[in-house]
Length: 420
Image (tube, rainbow, N blue to C red; front, side, top):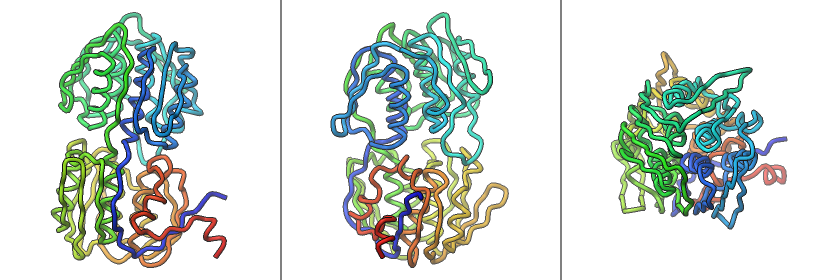
């Protein structure tokens, strides 16, 4: 029987919490460690299931690694294998970006179709386009993608649309001896963090934070030590949980500039926000105003915060409209929120939310951010919610239960429920 989290809602979150480093920045940086034979040390790495899956994949390819508390030491003296099996790649979409690093370091790579959260089509066509534009030979056979190169990967890539994974794939492919110009590149902070890490290893990277990137690789990259950026999605989830419960929280170790789109919406609703260099103090108003959201590429509202903001808006009196241009079908949370009394109407890929009081129910997380949304709703709801699908929460939110308890949330694990 899978573990169930029981949440007794209605208690405003109050207190102070430190934001952990970003999973979505850590994963491509871990893949980038394949590019050098020298040691790499990463400080304060999130201890999440997705990180462990990536480390299993890197070990399969030849990486030796060791944890020292929350510090991670890695070294890939040689690439022992150039295939990434389905049992690993199928668990997490982000593992697909090791393809570019394998091509750059070993000259070839084979990966199964990536898996992960299933909330709509997530094609890899821009990854393939990028590698072909850089000179790789790419083909697909029996659900496995193969690629090889005969020279350093160089060229000009014009993306059809901004793609975080495709941009990172091209950056990794060109960083070892290649040279690439990327047009229409993704501008997300996680892409910028990867670029800074590649620069630490010795690659030349220009244009970070813009749609035009230039990467000039080195024939050999060095090692080094690096600290990963704070997790803007985790920070946003905590802010929305505080807003939904009409609470007051202080976030430490955060990068406020990465949260501009969310902070603007919360301020528009009437909440009070004080911004420091690496802190955010949030104080909720008891009667917030509704707002509309269109999730889009950075610096727009993050698609990964679309499910959590839906849960928050379900508690706000009035009508809100939500759409997602990055993943237009990302609405697996809607049916589960409806179990809790949320009034939601989805038509033509636009979700209408009519805010009202929520009540506890039995619900299941169907992907990582849907899980975050259900936690937010449960914290705000009257009564008790029993949440299944905790596997997804553990992929994206480290030590979430204890950290919510530290903010005053009333949580009971399955074992505590059984003892009642």
